[in-house]
Length: 112
Image (cartoon, rainbow, N blue to C red; front, side, top):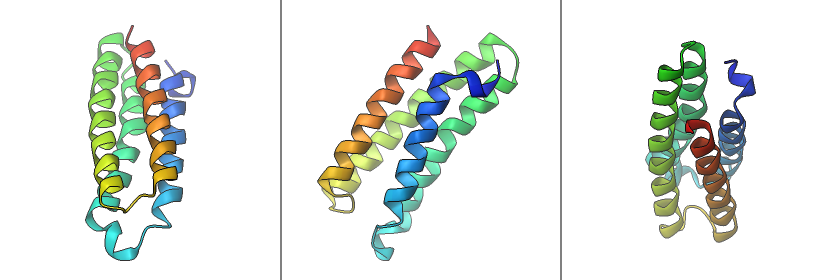
C-alpha cells in the first residue's frame, strides 16, 4: 500500500502540522524538554505508518498501526501534561485533543 493512500497517515500528518504550529508559540523555557518530546512523538507517528506501508505486507502494516496507536496515546498524555502545566492553552489543548481522537478513529479503522 502506498502510504499516501492511508487515511490514518493523513490525519497523523495534520496533527503533526498543528503541533508544530503550536510549538512555535510556546515559551522558550517550556519547549525543552516537553515541547521537543511532543514534537518528536508527533513526527514519529506518520513516519512509522509510512514505514509500515513500505514493508509491502499486511503483517508489517498492522504492527506499524499498533505502534502508531501506542505513540498516539503517549502523545495524548504529553499534551495533557502540557495543558496542566499551562504550556498549552485551553483552546489549543481542545484542538489537539480533537485531532488525537480523530487519529485514534482512523487508526482503528485501518487496523480492521
